[in-house]
Image (cartoon, rainbow, N blue to C red; front, side, top):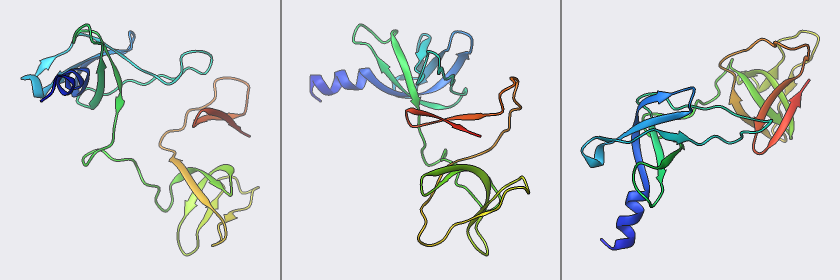
Length: 168
């Protein structure tokens, strides 16, 4: 193995979260390729920190990708986690409430896959969106939790790509 390969293997590591500090947004990670050595507290990288701040912490036992600084294995970051054979993204199924776009028009509706594909509103004042063979349906996510608004605004916001969208 070349010196470069050795350096890269020391800088980029995959490990399992040992414990977390939610307030400090740090976690310690165990690396089984180094006889179960556990890191010092590593900062968890998040997508945004200003007005559009995000918060994410890996779960204890979750596999994560870490990047270490060349000065030593005690200074580094958790870049994120990833899907593998045992952890995969949720696939939208018949009856799920989904965040979707039909021909680039976003909506949140209940997905119907049979007998026809359509997006059904939960409010009877609105009509279903029937998805024809000429339409493009993109499902961006499955709604798994609903959080009630704590402000007077009635808009629902969500993050997609690098843009911030608002739904009425």
